[in-house]
Length: 319
Image (cartoon, rainbow, N blue to C red):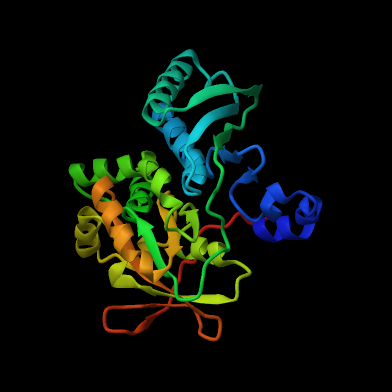
């Protein structure tokens, strides 16, 4: 079973009398009466990050991917808790200083504050982050409307290439190597969009497991399908160069996850305001597809209108 099947079979029933849990079918807990938004994420060495050779970068990636869950709901994060398990080597004085310095930088960048946590001795390195924000409303999952436009912020695929470079699966020049590795460790979060987002998005999720996988989660039990236009899915100029040089497959690059961009749907009549906000905030927001009837099968089409087989659906934890 994968993680969502486990939640559905064993744990969803435990939350049925608690509306704030959102049926365990979203990335956050939302108590409307208290205006409280909470998310929890765990990161394990070898699974969520390769190793701990760059603790200053790993901890930044962890913090950003965690608060991304709240940002994609149209909420600004305010507080975070961090718990870690490690040993004398991973939690050496030098590493702890780097972690502390990085957390200080992230707090300043995103105006968040450390509130507590826990530290445990273990030979397995892991971190658990609890992120907290406050809002009167959030953008839920599974709230798409028929004929909605599908949008994504930023560009996709750079983080995946950075991971492949770190694993020595892709070789390239020094400039591109530095660029993609930086994108892997330091996703660009659009926190300035949170104040505007609630005005036009019907439903949203951050892209952590891959464009296709997260779009499936975004719709989940809704009786809809989707159509994506491959040509409209945004990638960086550097990724375009690498795809040309290495003969890479674009659909594979953008389906692997770890982008932490916002995937959302909106009514077609919101297109003008979305363009206006994107321009005013200097944020790239791309229309990439359409929400369709369940009578149609979800698909991706190329620039010639041909349907493309999706070999990589994205990442799932399997047990």
